[in-house]
Amino acid sequence: MRRLTGALTGDGQAARVVPPTGFTAWLTVFTAAAMAFLAVFALALSFSAGRLADRWGEALARTATLRIAAPEGQVAAQTEAALRILEQTPGVAATRALTDAERRALLAPWFGPDLPVERLPIPQLIEITEEGEGFDPQGLRLRLAAEVPAAVLDDHTRWRRPLVQAADRLRALGWAAIALIGGAMAAMVTLAAQAALAANAQVIQVLRLVGARDAYIARAFTRRFTLRALGGAALGAAAGTGAVAALPREGAEGFLTALGFAGVEWATPLAVPALAAVVAWAATRTAARRTLRGLD
Image (cartoon, rainbow, N blue to C red; front, top):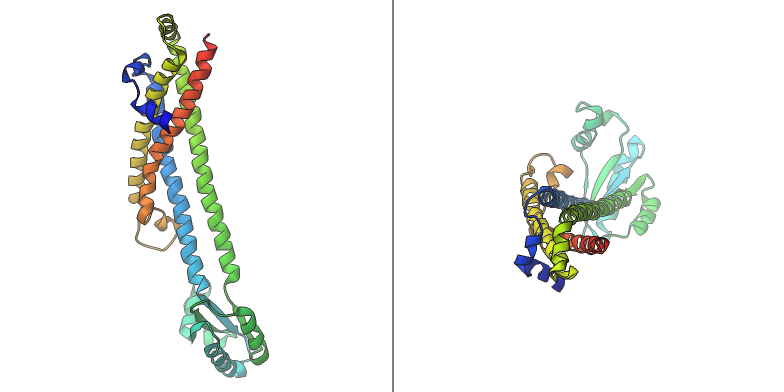
């Protein structure tokens, strides 16, 4: 970190050995800006995936469903027995048997709104809301099997597990994208630095003749390219943050409408230019030393 700070605040006169304009300057600035823009979206993807999965998982974790598929004449009796058992179960905050209208609404996306629920052997559904540490699903299943044989308990475990796995994979994908972006930026900055060094080979030879050390020349290139990357990344991060802020936040609930930052997450794009400067400093420093050795 001390070396990086020195590269940014070092001898500004030494940077005159680096051409202030040309394709290497624009290449470095453009690459840093583009990579920073993409990095901001990768961060937004990672954070949003985690929040969405946490919200869905929490909603499913606090609820369960009891399905009663009994013969027509036994549905009411077994429903009352199940509700009585649930009221006596520790960890159950509330229970409610779904009405015909609610069951029709659940099936409407597949069968339409005019489904005759009362004429079809559709199971009775009971919605369970948990409290505290929740209930013991295995113990409740054993009691239901003895007293309400037609009841099937779904504690939403099979729904939560894929959500957690999907969240982990999306978060990993976001961080992998950031790593790839950093690698691509390092490669482009390295190429630009090597091109600038090769274009100034004669200037470097003259500097050596008048007593300039290779460390002095390398610092000059490192400082100039680090500042270019820092400036370009700042522009790209600002544009990326503005684009994320402009994404829709109202309308249908879904992943795209939830894509963005929340709370302190809005401060994370501020770290992107600093990380870009670190990558540019390391890449340019390595490229400069390697190229200067090749000019001997």
